[in-house]
Amino acid sequence: MKSEFTEHLDLLRELILVPGVSGWEDRIRETIAGKINRYGDPNVDALGNLTLTIGDGDKHVLFIAHMDEIGLVVSHVEDDGYIRVRKVGGIDDRVLVGRTVDIYPGGSSDPVPGVIGLKPPHLMKDRMKEMGQVIKVEDILIDVGTRSRKETENLGITKLSPVILRKHFSVLANDLVATRGLDDRMGCAALIETVESIAAEGVSARITFAWSVQEELGLRGAYALGNQIRPDIAIAIDSCTTGDSPQVDFHLSAVRLNEGPVLRMFDRMAFASRGLMKQIVETARHASIPLQVAVTGGTTDGAAIQTFGVAMIPLAVPIRYVHSPTEVMSLRDYDYLVKLLTLIARNVATWSCC
Ligand SMILES: [Zn+2]
Image (cartoon, rainbow, N blue to C red; front, top):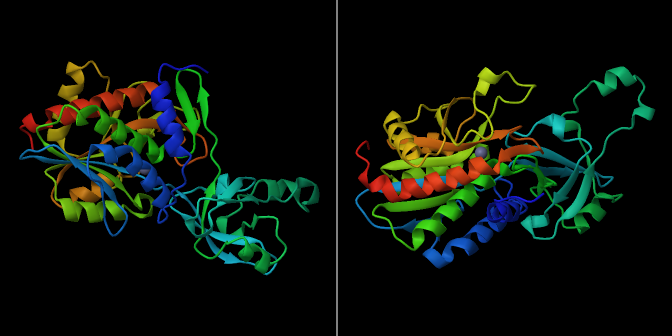
């Protein structure tokens, strides 16, 4: 399907297809670093957070998006070669069985494919009961085609190898994209595009762009960054789950696709800065960029940064079916987000709120 957003699409697809389970962000970090190193000297801290600082000025602003993704990690190889796993982040048991996965031995770039097997209905003793049950992560087994532990280990698979559910990237009607991993490669891509658009002209604030690690394990990278950087303002770019699909009560997260980026003002962990909200609403209004406001669940890296006494606001793109293999986002909303971030970077030095 043709889209007026081809450039966004190409970058999103490229970032999304790079694996980066929390704790194993090496490859996605290299990919992002390769796109920004012409604009400055990126830094990597001890946890693996990637940062790039642009501009000069009294005000220090942090834009942050997380580069890790949810997945699985190998916990044990059985005598018969089958692989046991644990979850990395908030992955739903219901989406595991019947999937094709890629296992990255030692985080290497050559994945070993595997499948999470499902007992055929033909062989169930009590079909009604068994088909109605959710198979828990503790009970799943990954089959890589081997018949012994030794054979599996010879493929390089060991305890701690990261496992990802294979991603499928589709463009739906109305400029929507569907794939796993929009959370938060969308944010990573938006920061790269913002760097590209402001680097040439320069900005009158000191702006640090950060691609954080281990967000899905409890905002680990963001806590470290908040402590290191101590910015005046932090803007966390992440997803905001929508209430606009038939299986969800709309009021639980009352935002919709194609109605613009979202200020996630209140979530499970944090109340965002109302002063920053006022400034961003004003900036968006001048540029005729639609905005939505969310009172929602989950949280963002912004909550961790806030604990260091920083004025913080999460700026999101609405995403349907978050943390599933079929997250859905509007390219129009994403395009508005990139435009808005660029305007914020240009204007933030003059903001009087914080
Ligand atoms: Zn996220």
